[in-house]
Length: 213
Image (cartoon, rainbow, N blue to C red):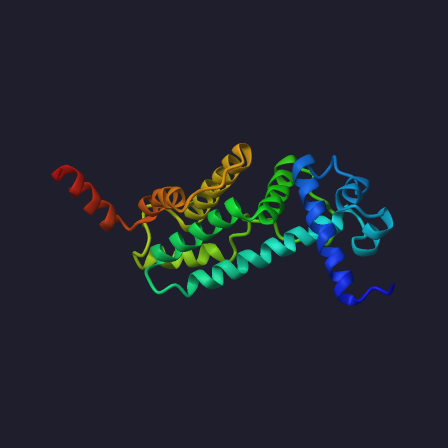
């Protein structure tokens, strides 16, 4: 029976989903293409037809993650509100997706653990690291801080590092305990970000409210 392009595309997706799950669970260095073939229920030859080597899986992972984050930023910038509303919206969406989308979680986990473990492939074609490239985010944060749309007591670089560190910590807790967060839990977590990144005038108002009670 002759396979169509649609069949080939489905096979590639099935292999990718199986492979990314194995890589996230076992780690990049410890996983072989034989492991991926067993998880996908296919031959090693089928793996090679769609993915030349392990590095191809890793690059595909980063490309998909980067595409998601680019789309997330674009969507957040269309939010009708203050810069703080934009940050809160983006943070909420990425935590919700990581908590509830297993494929996304596996991809992000692979990227994080590979970067931390120092096992990132170096073949000259690597993508930019996830959540470490502030080239787009830092200028936006700097402009928001300058306009008093975010807390002005830190630099944009510090704000970026703090926000991404918060997200990485939430991700690790979700992985460690295999959590699926409720909307209420996500809202409570993001409230921490809202309070920490709010302009000073908002923080002062909060303090005055606390003293009054």
